[in-house]
Image (cartoon, rainbow, N blue to C red; front, side, top):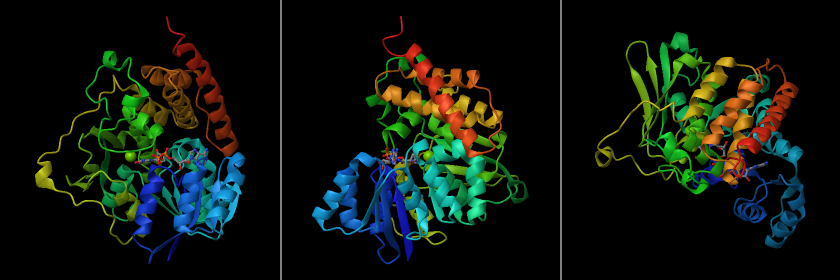
Length: 396
Ligand code: NAD
Ligand code: MG
């Protein structure tokens, strides 16, 4: 029986995870559930899954969570705050952690799960972009395993023998990450000047949280994924390519030196990748509809438009710079996306904010957590200044 902690239980990945878990009560048990602020949603999940531990990140909501659980007759331990997230990720109640908090807020608990030797199912890509070397060191220290939930990395993992080999020895020439192109594929810079958060969040193929939806619209999501692939598979930037594939059926590919290209295909539904991580090395039913190739009839591929979607180029630039540059990129992006979602920043200024932050803050070696947290904070402050300059109401 796998004992599972789901961090970010009330989000899109959390919901898909719990859907898979509920299909296999003989294999999977939820032992901890954590969320940010949505007390009623968390209490409902606790009522259904009966974990040992319920964590609400915002301490101001702890009393309400206790009251709701008591009223529902759920007898589980309740805790709140950052330390409680770490406990949920590293306590003896679980052997598996689904890291599905969005953004830098998930870093500490993701690192804690790795250090504690859990099976880490990583959705929280911002953690590895911010602190890749530290996460890998924590994994090595804990002796656990990391299985990527991001569909592209999950696909690459499935196409590599043993999941994570020495790419040179395995005869890998390059990794090809597919990108849907997001809701604005094919548009020009002029078309993008006035797009709204609502349009940016209307993804054609995937239903996801708002932050990653905007990242998909800017192509920063693919940029973060290039960096994620670099750390997960020890692949240099020049061996990671992005190909736009609007149907989101081929989730990624691995090209070998002998001319073979292996791909993983499936309908765009995160439950496939999540179930693969939960059950690995076995496979289990997910409720995902079988792929109907004849109904699809065709699959299209094209090059990404890096001139219009600057964020992808900036992510490559940060990866090549190394050190704290990817931490800066991630922090500036989080601030800019939040400002865009809040109607404070135009869509195109997201990339401008990140570019200016990377210019202003030279990369330093990413030696320890304190250095990275400092780089994160410095980049956020810098981004806030730039956002005030470029922000809506400040133009003209
Ligand atoms: P979401 O916004 O739907 O859910 C986010 C979850 O994180 C919620 O449960 C929320 O309560 C929790 N959370 C937010 N801030 C928190 C904080 N400060 N402390 C504790 N918990 C906090 O997001 P999502 O779409 O589920 O994405 C989650 C992560 O998975 C992101 O890193 C995203 O990039 C990654 N991911 C998502 C998908 C997808 O299909 N949704 C695919 C690949 C990767
Ligand atoms: Mg992805």
